Image 1: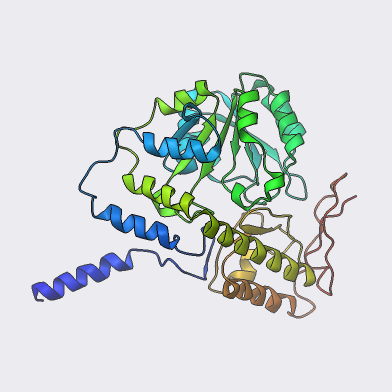
Image 2: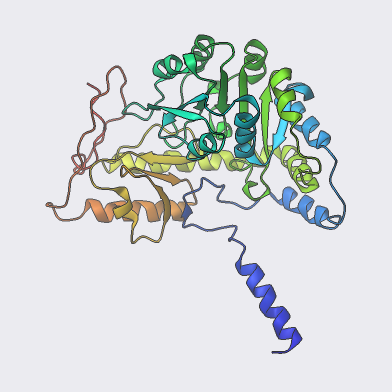
Length: 383
């Protein structure tokens, strides 16, 4: 093989290692279905021209950008490799091995892994039948715990607890218990349903809010996350900031994203609209979904595992051991493939396995299924 042919082969192998920016089948990781915004791509191209230079010793410029956008002081901000990296840092710096961490179940699968890596004892609190957090039980479990984790919206169900209920839980837990409020999907939540974070961390110095640029901003490959907290906790996290650890590409990407805010909002609105369309079509087919406020929908286990429904579809969705499934919102083409896979199952012979109603859940009402398939995937009985 000639040297030119070898170079071409090497280039081909490198390109094949990169995931496609647009992939209608990739519905398992809650990524943005679109590439970064044009202004962000242009900024990253400019960054590559200076990739021979080190970034800042500590990412003070990015810290300032985030603080200004979030409406807090720089001393309230810490940065890390995605929200996951910051969550791990919180557990390693603010908790000691053997202490307890309260988690909902199911939750983002990273948290049980982080707890194990930090040597913490996980206390699992089951969700209710509609995929909501049991905040009363979580507050009770947090009385002798070092950390309690709340995802809002929740992952994997996408459900959203009210601002008042979250603040009530924070007020109920001990003052030395850290409340880790994961807002990875907050950009998909209607503005009037978002928590006033500057006010929250000013009122409760034991709260740490985690956010990421991986979801709505479409920068998952750059691994940029940030924490918002009172100065003492944020300072603790900032003190563990790795020198030269945040690429200058992250800084220019965030700056360009903030400057292109109107375009970003259009993309978010498109994803939210597609989420509503998919939920409406599922509901019309008699398929129950939780009330998601994120960039995905969640179909609870209803007898037949959803993994069987999507097994031959080519779609990559997130299946759960109990038979539930989480589906990232993608393009309209992705939505049509999801609906087609489900319709094929709904139109199966009458003796196909039917779902079963999960245990009754009191004092909460959800949307009721309609259509001839309602007996296969019904909504939970509200009691």
